[in-house]
Each structure stands twice: as C-alpha cells, then as structure tokens.
Amino acid sequence: MPETILIDKISDYSGHNAAIYGLSQISGDDHFYSVGGEGWIVKWPNTGSVMDGVLVGETGGKLFSIATVCENDLLIAGDIHGDLFWIDTNNKEILGRSAFHKGSVFDILVINPSQLVTVSGDGYICLWDIGQRLPLLSKRLSNQGLRCVVHDPETGNLFVGASDNNIYVLDGLSFEQKYIIHQAHQNSIFALNHISSIGLFSGGRDAHMKIWDLIDFTAKTDVPAHWYTINKILYIPELKLIVTASRDKTIRLWDAENNDLIRTLDVQKGGHFNSVNTLLWNSEHQTLLSAGDDRVIRKWKILRNDI
Image 1 (tube, rainbow, N blue to C red):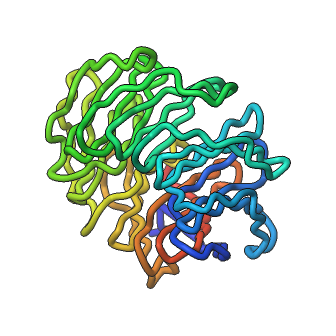
Image 2: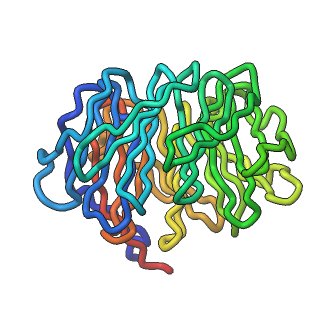
Image 3: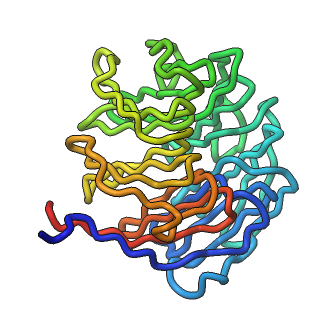
C-alpha cells in the first residue's frame, strides 16, 4: 500500500551563530527571513545555495519574534529587552526601534496592512500603527508573561496564550476581555493556531495539544502530542495537516480531520539535534521550513496523495 504522506528532506540553511526563534516570508518574494539569538535578521533564497543568507539587520540583542508586512516589504522583529525593530527588507535598513515593552517580545501578529499586535513577557498586549511605528493601545492581561497571539478574521477576536496557563479572548479593536479559558494547560502556553473550520489549537510546556470549541471554548480534544514543550503549531490547509514543533527535538505531522499522528521527523530522519522552535509553510513551493536551537533551518518537501 503506498504511503499517503511523502516527505523529502531537501536542504539545510546554515549561517546563524545562535538559536533560531522565528521565520517569516513576504508573499510574492522568493525569499524567507529568520531571526536568532545573536540578534541577526537574515534573508534566505527559497531556491539556490543554502549558504546564500544575507544579513538584513543586526540588533545586538536576542530576537524572539518576527513578522512581515507584504504591502511595503517591511519586517518587524522583537527582542529580549522589549524593543521592536522596523526593517526595510529591500534596502536592508533598520528604519527605527520602538521601546515600549518591559519584557521580551515573544510574538508579533500583523492583523491588517496598517496594524499589528505584540505580546510580551511583561504581561502586556499592544496594538501598533505600522505606518507611524507607534503604540495605539495597550492592556495588561496577566502578572505573568504573554507568549503567543492569533487572530480570528471572521469575528475580529484575538486569542492570547499566557504563562499563567490561561488563554485570553479579546476584542481585536478595543482589547475588551470577552472570555478567559482558565487553566487551559498545566503550564505556560507557547503556541496557538486558529482554524475556523476546526477550532482553536493550543500547546505549551505540558506537551499536550488541545483543540477548543470556538463557541463555548470547551476542550474538544486533548492529545499528549510530544515529550516536552510544544513551541509551534502550524496548519497546512491544502494538505489538511497540523504540524507541531517541540523541545523534544521532533516535528510531528497530524491529520487535521481526525488528529491521528501521521509522521514524526526526528534526527534519524534528517531532523534537528536540539529543540525545534519554529515552523513556516511555503504554499507555492509546497515546502516546510523548520528551525531551532541547532542554528540550522531545514527544508522539507511534503506531498499528500490521499486527498
């Protein structure tokens, strides 16, 4: 019987001198971007030599988060000190640095071409004007850190995962608190993904992947997905796959319709030697990028023949 999922390890991108924490891309640009613990922002080709990374910016502080704005080729990176860096990717120029947060910027979410949201270790969520590079609204949700944020474009709601084990549901414009999923996990929540047809996915230090109903916010599914912390949850709609990255050094592929485990990518299969921190899907090339503490970005070709 032929395999339903075909995975081919294509290449490794190397050059970072510290752990890699974030990956992003600009639609229509045949490159992707990475940020790492040495403060580098690097531009890589989707095709060509794996050593062709170009340094776009150097911040001097450990970078944990990255986002891109396709409309103006802008890249935003967040660091350990709470600063945001605004980078012109075409001219490889740091346009400015915004100091607002008092803790690490753990996640950046672009919600529309003119606004983005940041969450930080200081417990604050902040709405930013992209054009002016200024904060518009901020709110402290917790006395512990906020680790991740996702957006529901249909309702406008924001979902925020925190180190107090809660998931906060907010109005995306006013930050009005609509609901709290109390003690959603047994420890810090590091990863969220909103899939309108399925639910809200969450994961964190307890290594469980949960799926929450978007109406009453009850847990529909609880899967012991990894041995250690889940750092990232990615959805590949055209392949109907959920992909998780973990501190246990593995990447796991799950069937999005029944939550069955399909494949584990570990070091024996060409995977990572240390914690896998982040993932990125390129739909044009049908490739998955993964990166982590081993300072290498790995590229995988994934095909599915049963859908």
